Length: 207
Image (cartoon, rainbow, N blue to C red; front, side):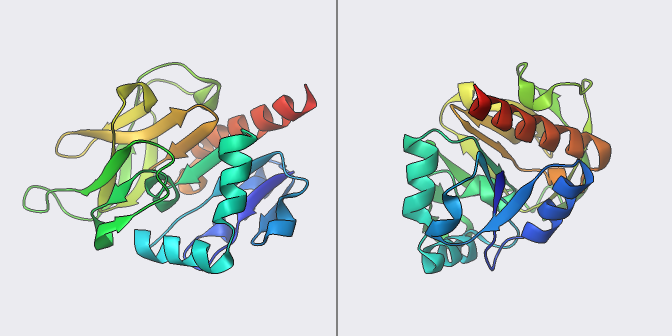
């Protein structure tokens, strides 16, 4: 069972619909009791870093998320803002985030490119991984973002894109995956990534 965090600032319904298209069993999680039978967690995101942090704090599920992801090593996938808040600090709202991964979130230079970035952009893989199994080089994914992550450790980079310079598009850190692009809105390639994540998570539980 895949748990999709359902909070005010997220787009959990889009992710739920995407999981339905690929036949993945999932449910919404928004309270401590909901974490009991899940094999992986997906944290969707739209909007701002502060709204996301405030909403998670209001639900009082950050301690349970940290217990599952950081201690039990439950596979985790963050999408868009759900990726950004995994890091230490965001320039958006000048807010401290979860700090699970070292690095910060910065804004695109709006004197050089249109901000936010909206539309399709090409990804380049930095290494092989089951998360991107079955994809070709230079696949296109859908983005809506004004900010992007700068990981402190280049080893966390899984994919990059270019928008007035190279920026982090996907990361892998231990059991944590995250995508700046909206994989749930990226057509067949996005559904492939989502299916890879969910199937690998279920496989790990059955071992």
